[in-house]
Image (tube, rainbow, N blue to C red; front, top):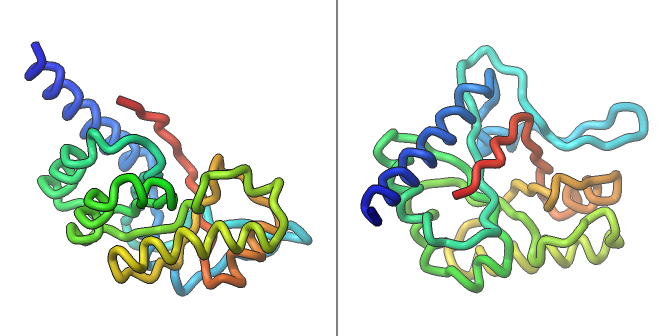
Length: 184
């Protein structure tokens, strides 16, 4: 029964990943977004939700703010299907699961910043936002040598202060346009 549950969980993760991929139409892999930046529409600063391209590409990403029980399975599924993705790292997750972070980086996946403590960013000052970003950035850099330049705000919350502060720290703010809410 335990083996069946593990197989079922693996199939679910793979299916959720594929469903997510199929739902997205023409989005450039987040690492390629570095030439783009957040833009303003009127006075409101917006993160990057998608990028217009004639190429048939999608971006798949995961927020590393959960447990790590399924990380090896997820990495194997991605490897088996020759898929690279972006993992947005929370600083506390990096502290708790350093070996998982190393595995993700060594597998060639992009690493992005998801803040140090996963706060509601809209309630923070510009300096507090920058501290959240730099603290998580330094943990990933010290552990993997990776200089991250993508930031996904926790809960998807952002305002002008969040976008501007992230940009000042050298980050492109990334959102999603399809969410699976898949949990195992």
